[in-house]
Length: 196
View 1 (spheres, rainbow, N blue to C red):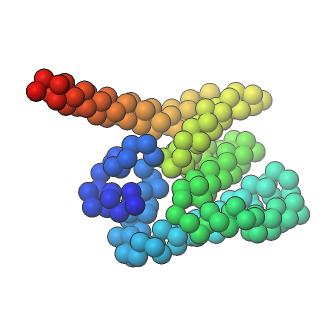
View 2 (cartoon, rainbow, N blue to C red):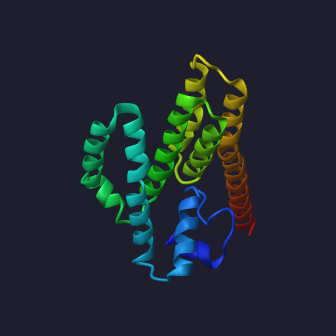
């Protein structure tokens, strides 16, 4: 388990650079608190699965109204994929929670144009982008939605785009540097073998 490996030697970059780190940080911290490798990751997923009902309901309620929000919530509660992801230690449910929170605060921002709401939205989307790569699409897409607002607030758009783009850019450059170093070491080792 990558989280247990990370827990032995905590670092900003987990041992496997193919996956984004926040999921492993959360699992590792949970294992530090309750060292039960078969139970703790599932408990963390279950907590995030249950918590995701709150932003989901609030988001659907804000856009479509209370009746449809309640019906949608009941469907989500019994949706087999959501239930399954809530009891296994995969990153999807944690990503979903952060994404739903980010979208809720973004759509709330679009209603009242309070910059604080966009800040909170960007923080949740940053967290989502540290869990799964799919969040990076939202980081690119939301500023375009802001461009089509009647009340354009350029300062908010620029802040949102810069704030949410920092982690993906750092991750891309850092993992490419690590991959390059690994490849260079591998080529160096191969040339040493051939020289002998």
